[in-house]
Image 1 (cartoon, helix red, strand yellow):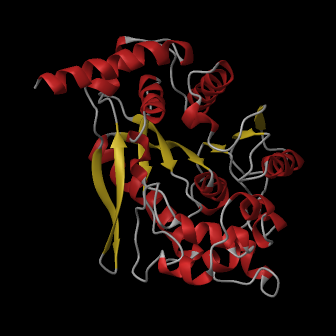
Image 2 (tube, one colour; image 1 turned 180 degrees about the vertical axis):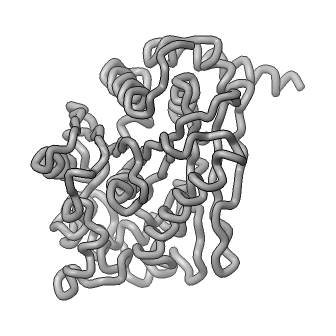
Image 3 (cartoon, one colour; image 1 turned 120 degrees about the vertical axis):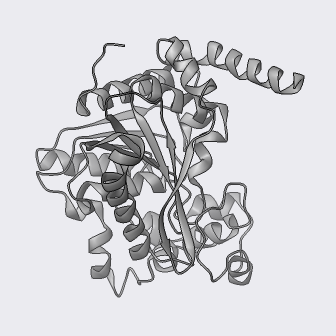
Length: 341
């Protein structure tokens, strides 16, 4: 019991040190995390014996709450909805969203290569339909006030949600995401991964994955060998989507956010480090430009000198705190959340 008490005190102290500079610390922020340390888990879909889950983080209120649909990253090969509870930085972000009056719903989806890209998009669509249909009765959310936020591959899926979900979300927040999945950065051997990591053979890559669908593979995981293999050999589009980007490029059109922007695309707030060695910063620049060409409100927050996953390990630094504050204000504005506590 003493160990448990000490752990709880330690968590509170971390919040007292980290959160005030990110967002004004209120009793609701601490209560949101300490009194609700674990989300409620639901099965939003079951297919061929594979259960796909969603975690709901919420401070209950009498009024229907606006929602962030959170999508984890991991190149569509790795990751888990549970990443929101795996580190102090991610827990702090959840606390910020809860304190801002938002419910957070973090979803799993089937992972590649056991499941191909078209079916992954189907999972995203089914999660959104479940949220809108079951959310109001199951956990008191407003189905007409949903924003989508995701990181890395989750940022890609966030950008996909701007045109593949109906009705469209009210706002999108892609962290270091991408709107192009067959460009040279994914379709040709990546110099960074070839020079900084031991080369992975196809045999090693295939031995790190299986045949049956899975929905969770939290980092670190042996599946990273498969990801390295695809990047070192420029095979990610082929291995994840199941199409050849050279001979079947047209088949990628339904899965390319850049090719599906219209004036109806949701307002979008991009965040990307200009020293990202995993997802090139230029991909957010290009997608932002595409939105502007169609008259869609958007803003790109450039995290100068930052790399991939900048928000995971630098949450207490001034530029990251300022960026998170802007994310909160953007979400509150587009989800019509009152500033009154």
